[in-house]
Length: 226
Image (cartoon, rainbow, N blue to C red; front, side, top):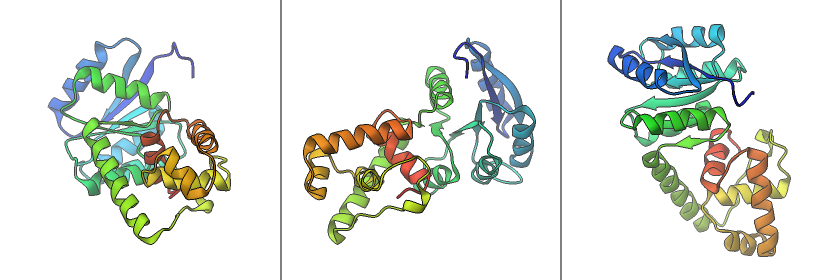
Protein backbone atom coordinates (compact mmCIF):
# COMPACT_ATOMS: atom_id res chain seq x y z
CA UNK A 1 0.00 0.00 0.00
CA UNK A 2 1.10 3.56 -0.76
CA UNK A 3 2.28 5.02 2.54
CA UNK A 4 0.92 8.41 1.43
CA UNK A 5 -2.57 7.03 0.77
CA UNK A 6 -5.27 7.69 3.34
CA UNK A 7 -6.23 4.81 5.60
CA UNK A 8 -9.89 3.96 5.00
CA UNK A 9 -11.67 3.03 8.24
CA UNK A 10 -14.96 1.20 8.72
CA UNK A 11 -16.45 1.78 12.17
CA UNK A 12 -18.77 -0.97 13.45
CA UNK A 13 -20.33 0.39 16.64
CA UNK A 14 -23.92 0.45 17.92
CA UNK A 15 -23.66 3.50 20.19
CA UNK A 16 -24.26 6.75 18.28
CA UNK A 17 -22.26 8.92 20.72
CA UNK A 18 -19.24 6.66 20.37
CA UNK A 19 -19.53 6.81 16.59
CA UNK A 20 -19.67 10.59 16.74
CA UNK A 21 -16.60 10.74 18.96
CA UNK A 22 -14.56 8.42 16.77
CA UNK A 23 -15.68 10.26 13.65
CA UNK A 24 -14.44 13.53 15.15
CA UNK A 25 -11.06 12.01 16.03
CA UNK A 26 -10.63 10.65 12.51
CA UNK A 27 -11.70 13.93 10.90
CA UNK A 28 -8.95 15.69 12.82
CA UNK A 29 -6.28 13.15 11.89
CA UNK A 30 -4.37 13.57 8.65
CA UNK A 31 -4.00 10.38 6.63
CA UNK A 32 -7.08 8.62 8.03
CA UNK A 33 -10.63 8.82 6.70
CA UNK A 34 -13.89 7.31 7.93
CA UNK A 35 -15.19 5.45 4.87
CA UNK A 36 -18.36 3.99 6.40
CA UNK A 37 -20.21 3.13 9.62
CA UNK A 38 -22.34 0.18 10.70
CA UNK A 39 -24.59 -0.19 13.74
CA UNK A 40 -24.66 -4.00 13.99
CA UNK A 41 -22.54 -7.01 13.19
CA UNK A 42 -24.38 -8.22 10.11
CA UNK A 43 -24.39 -4.79 8.50
CA UNK A 44 -20.72 -4.50 9.40
CA UNK A 45 -19.87 -7.65 7.45
CA UNK A 46 -21.80 -6.35 4.44
CA UNK A 47 -20.14 -2.92 4.64
CA UNK A 48 -16.72 -4.59 4.84
CA UNK A 49 -17.39 -6.36 1.51
CA UNK A 50 -18.77 -3.19 -0.04
CA UNK A 51 -16.23 -0.61 1.16
CA UNK A 52 -13.09 -2.79 1.38
CA UNK A 53 -11.64 -0.71 4.22
CA UNK A 54 -8.01 -0.80 5.25
CA UNK A 55 -8.90 -0.96 8.96
CA UNK A 56 -12.13 -1.99 10.68
CA UNK A 57 -12.83 -0.64 14.17
CA UNK A 58 -14.95 -3.39 15.70
CA UNK A 59 -16.97 -3.25 18.90
CA UNK A 60 -17.71 -6.60 20.56
CA UNK A 61 -21.15 -5.99 22.07
CA UNK A 62 -23.10 -5.60 18.82
CA UNK A 63 -26.71 -6.45 17.88
CA UNK A 64 -27.52 -9.36 15.53
CA UNK A 65 -24.09 -10.97 15.73
CA UNK A 66 -21.37 -9.83 18.11
CA UNK A 67 -18.04 -8.38 17.09
CA UNK A 68 -16.19 -11.66 17.55
CA UNK A 69 -18.47 -13.49 15.12
CA UNK A 70 -18.38 -10.52 12.73
CA UNK A 71 -14.57 -10.59 12.88
CA UNK A 72 -14.57 -14.31 12.08
CA UNK A 73 -16.91 -13.84 9.11
CA UNK A 74 -14.94 -10.92 7.70
CA UNK A 75 -11.67 -12.83 7.99
CA UNK A 76 -13.25 -15.76 6.15
CA UNK A 77 -13.89 -13.39 3.22
CA UNK A 78 -10.09 -13.10 2.81
CA UNK A 79 -10.23 -9.33 2.54
CA UNK A 80 -7.06 -7.35 3.13
CA UNK A 81 -8.79 -5.37 5.89
CA UNK A 82 -7.18 -5.31 9.32
CA UNK A 83 -9.53 -5.57 12.29
CA UNK A 84 -8.92 -3.54 15.43
CA UNK A 85 -11.20 -4.50 18.30
CA UNK A 86 -12.50 -1.30 19.93
CA UNK A 87 -14.38 -2.16 23.09
CA UNK A 88 -14.85 -1.67 26.82
CA UNK A 89 -14.55 -5.40 27.44
CA UNK A 90 -11.25 -6.57 28.89
CA UNK A 91 -12.10 -10.02 30.27
CA UNK A 92 -9.89 -12.92 29.25
CA UNK A 93 -12.59 -14.84 27.36
CA UNK A 94 -13.38 -11.89 25.06
CA UNK A 95 -9.74 -11.00 24.47
CA UNK A 96 -8.63 -14.45 23.41
CA UNK A 97 -11.85 -15.19 21.50
CA UNK A 98 -11.28 -12.00 19.49
CA UNK A 99 -7.63 -12.85 18.81
CA UNK A 100 -8.60 -16.40 17.86
CA UNK A 101 -11.22 -15.01 15.45
CA UNK A 102 -8.44 -13.14 13.65
CA UNK A 103 -8.40 -9.66 15.21
CA UNK A 104 -5.22 -7.74 14.42
CA UNK A 105 -5.32 -5.53 17.48
CA UNK A 106 -7.26 -4.73 20.63
CA UNK A 107 -7.80 -1.27 22.10
CA UNK A 108 -10.01 -0.12 24.95
CA UNK A 109 -12.60 2.61 24.49
CA UNK A 110 -10.97 4.60 27.26
CA UNK A 111 -7.87 5.11 25.14
CA UNK A 112 -6.86 8.63 24.14
CA UNK A 113 -7.36 9.98 20.63
CA UNK A 114 -3.61 9.71 20.06
CA UNK A 115 -3.59 6.06 21.16
CA UNK A 116 -6.54 5.26 18.90
CA UNK A 117 -4.97 6.80 15.81
CA UNK A 118 -1.62 5.16 16.61
CA UNK A 119 -3.38 1.79 16.86
CA UNK A 120 -5.16 2.32 13.54
CA UNK A 121 -1.87 3.19 11.83
CA UNK A 122 -0.06 0.27 13.47
CA UNK A 123 -2.53 -2.44 12.46
CA UNK A 124 -2.74 -0.97 8.96
CA UNK A 125 1.03 -1.47 8.71
CA UNK A 126 0.73 -5.07 9.87
CA UNK A 127 1.68 -4.66 13.52
CA UNK A 128 -0.33 -6.58 16.14
CA UNK A 129 -1.30 -3.62 18.36
CA UNK A 130 -2.42 -4.31 21.93
CA UNK A 131 -3.75 -1.94 24.55
CA UNK A 132 -1.31 -1.98 27.53
CA UNK A 133 -3.96 -3.53 29.79
CA UNK A 134 -4.60 -6.26 27.22
CA UNK A 135 -0.88 -6.84 26.72
CA UNK A 136 -0.55 -7.50 30.46
CA UNK A 137 -3.39 -10.02 30.25
CA UNK A 138 -1.73 -11.79 27.32
CA UNK A 139 1.62 -11.87 29.11
CA UNK A 140 -0.07 -13.25 32.22
CA UNK A 141 -1.61 -16.00 30.11
CA UNK A 142 1.80 -16.73 28.59
CA UNK A 143 3.31 -17.06 32.06
CA UNK A 144 0.56 -19.55 33.00
CA UNK A 145 1.36 -21.56 29.86
CA UNK A 146 5.03 -21.47 30.79
CA UNK A 147 4.29 -22.86 34.24
CA UNK A 148 2.07 -25.61 32.82
CA UNK A 149 4.60 -26.63 30.18
CA UNK A 150 7.46 -26.55 32.66
CA UNK A 151 5.46 -29.01 34.76
CA UNK A 152 5.00 -31.38 31.82
CA UNK A 153 8.32 -30.52 30.09
CA UNK A 154 6.46 -30.46 26.75
CA UNK A 155 6.98 -28.33 23.66
CA UNK A 156 3.70 -27.90 21.81
CA UNK A 157 3.35 -26.63 18.25
CA UNK A 158 1.08 -27.31 15.30
CA UNK A 159 2.84 -27.77 11.99
CA UNK A 160 -0.47 -27.95 10.11
CA UNK A 161 -1.28 -24.33 10.95
CA UNK A 162 2.06 -22.97 9.75
CA UNK A 163 1.40 -20.65 6.81
CA UNK A 164 4.30 -18.28 7.48
CA UNK A 165 7.13 -20.39 6.14
CA UNK A 166 8.51 -21.18 9.58
CA UNK A 167 10.90 -24.10 9.77
CA UNK A 168 10.26 -26.95 12.19
CA UNK A 169 12.94 -25.57 14.50
CA UNK A 170 11.43 -22.09 14.32
CA UNK A 171 8.05 -23.57 15.24
CA UNK A 172 9.68 -25.10 18.30
CA UNK A 173 11.28 -21.78 19.21
CA UNK A 174 7.97 -19.96 18.69
CA UNK A 175 6.21 -22.34 21.06
CA UNK A 176 8.84 -21.52 23.67
CA UNK A 177 8.43 -17.78 23.05
CA UNK A 178 4.71 -18.20 23.73
CA UNK A 179 5.62 -20.05 26.91
CA UNK A 180 7.62 -16.98 27.98
CA UNK A 181 11.13 -18.37 27.71
CA UNK A 182 14.07 -16.03 27.16
CA UNK A 183 16.75 -16.66 24.53
CA UNK A 184 19.12 -18.30 27.04
CA UNK A 185 16.28 -20.53 28.28
CA UNK A 186 15.36 -21.45 24.70
CA UNK A 187 18.98 -22.30 23.98
CA UNK A 188 19.16 -24.54 27.05
CA UNK A 189 15.82 -26.21 26.28
CA UNK A 190 16.75 -27.00 22.66
CA UNK A 191 20.46 -27.69 23.28
CA UNK A 192 21.58 -24.90 20.93
CA UNK A 193 23.82 -21.88 21.42
CA UNK A 194 22.42 -18.56 22.58
CA UNK A 195 23.50 -16.98 19.29
CA UNK A 196 21.53 -19.61 17.38
CA UNK A 197 18.48 -19.05 19.57
CA UNK A 198 18.74 -15.30 18.98
CA UNK A 199 18.99 -15.86 15.22
CA UNK A 200 15.90 -18.08 15.24
CA UNK A 201 13.92 -15.48 17.20
CA UNK A 202 14.99 -12.74 14.77
CA UNK A 203 13.91 -14.87 11.82
CA UNK A 204 10.54 -15.63 13.45
CA UNK A 205 9.82 -11.93 14.05
CA UNK A 206 10.58 -11.19 10.40
CA UNK A 207 8.41 -14.03 9.07
CA UNK A 208 5.47 -13.09 11.31
CA UNK A 209 5.87 -9.38 10.43
CA UNK A 210 6.01 -8.34 14.08
CA UNK A 211 8.36 -6.15 16.09
CA UNK A 212 8.75 -7.98 19.38
CA UNK A 213 8.22 -11.24 21.25
CA UNK A 214 4.85 -10.24 22.72
CA UNK A 215 3.45 -9.55 19.26
CA UNK A 216 4.92 -12.85 18.05
CA UNK A 217 3.16 -14.67 20.89
CA UNK A 218 -0.15 -12.94 20.13
CA UNK A 219 0.14 -13.77 16.43
CA UNK A 220 1.01 -17.38 17.24
CA UNK A 221 -2.06 -17.79 19.45
CA UNK A 222 -4.33 -15.90 17.05
CA UNK A 223 -3.24 -17.97 14.05
CA UNK A 224 -3.38 -21.28 15.92
CA UNK A 225 0.34 -21.94 15.56
CA UNK A 226 0.61 -23.10 19.19
